[in-house]
Length: 278
Image 1: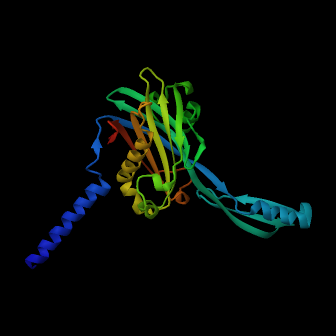
Image 2: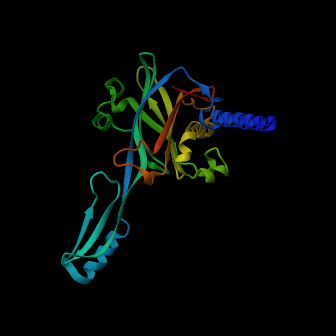
Image 3: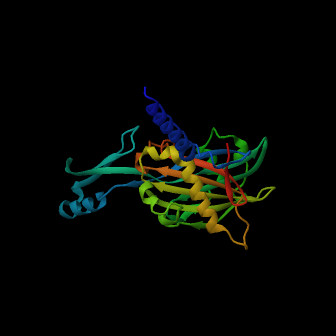
């Protein structure tokens, strides 16, 4: 092999390694010695399309002979609705189940000590639907999650500062359109336990392809930094921790399981800079 070809291949290899470190591993991002535990699940929305309108239209013509039926086969996400007249199908359409948001709990630990626990329920683009999640819901949903991270009362948590900034303000400018960023809601959750503290939690909905997921660390760091900048004020204490949940292609969600659809990154905030945990 000619020397210049080896040289060129070497340069390409170095560029790829540098790109991996910058965009995937996020080597330049600060690291924290703290650890995080998390239990997350999807909030889903179900769309029936124009089923109700079609049913009313048919009943206006044929009366009670019209029936509407829904069918979602076990082990699938989407289903089908049908409208029948005397048992014969006259209309049919798709039932689509999409991921609308996320809920769950983050716990920050240092060795055996728990620094804080933060429950949340956030729907991107809907601050009115964003709040903490009750302990009972968490215990019922996450039976296998360590009990010590759910050993708190609903009154131990409070939430405020919820906002849904436009995609153009998420820290990427015009690149946000390329990434397919659709909507975000963030809130600050306050832990009122023995050592009060707080966590900024954001849930962002994107419409990219699976290639986007490996870059979650870099994307989340940029978005978290942008949000911390918005919250900075001499009149308020900044969050001590932050968690970023990036939801990609909500329509690809598996039944009752969002793990293949989202990535999450948890940070300790040092002087306004996110330091990634474990």
